[in-house]
Amino acid sequence: MPRYALKIEYHGAPFVGWQRQTDLPSVQGAVETALAKLEPRGHTIAAAGRTDAGVHALGQVAHCDMKQDWDAFRLSEALNYHLKPQPVAITACAAVPDDFHARFSACERRYLFRILSRRAPATHQDGLVWQIKHELDLEAMNEAVSFLQGKHDFTTFRSTICQADSPVKTLDHLSVARVETLGGPEYHFDVRARSFLHNQVRSFVGTLERVGTGSWSPQDVQSALEARDRSACGPVCPPQGLYLAHVTYPQDPFA
Image 1 (cartoon, helix red, strand yellow):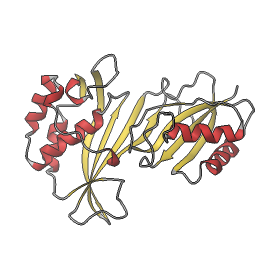
Image 2 (tube, one colour):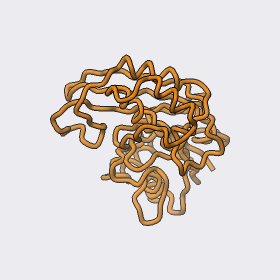
Image 3 (cartoon, one colour):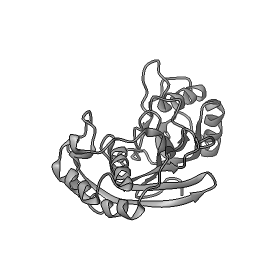
């Protein structure tokens, strides 16, 4: 059966997350339903990451197996037709080898988190950012970041329902930048690793926001990490500012 990689963009607000759930709207379910319009049968697709409810994607990657040989562009166009009017789009499609796996072949996942800092209610960015009303200390947050990068036991920064076998992960990159936009100043958190624990990125951002306000010092983040205790974590930020931005593979299937 020919295998295809799909690059998927979606707005997470209407969905319970990526993973298919009975009688509840999911991104996986939306794509599988569209595939069934093209080849009427049950379809099961695998994705690079299982995003939670309300989380968005700019570059989620999934793979599907089809019975007939499809032109990749034609397949993406047909899927986009059947995905309407849901906020899900196939932005790229490519034929891939049988041993390509969207999850297990990935070597890095990149997440973006956006915080909008302004007092007036968000209009155009509502549901796409975490809005706060105060400025943040960028230098202090980036000082705190230094304690999180590298290989650590991240028990403090993972959900109590996380199913990963080990809390030890290697965080390849984490940085915070202030970006001036037409809608107001935003703080962008760029987070990269091979894999993540459940709620790890949102735990990072919520904790670093406390540093940005001055409620925590950068050294408090180091102490929280070393505690290896979920209760030592700062608040977990809301999901609407989080995006699965990019997935890296040894060979880019869409190149």
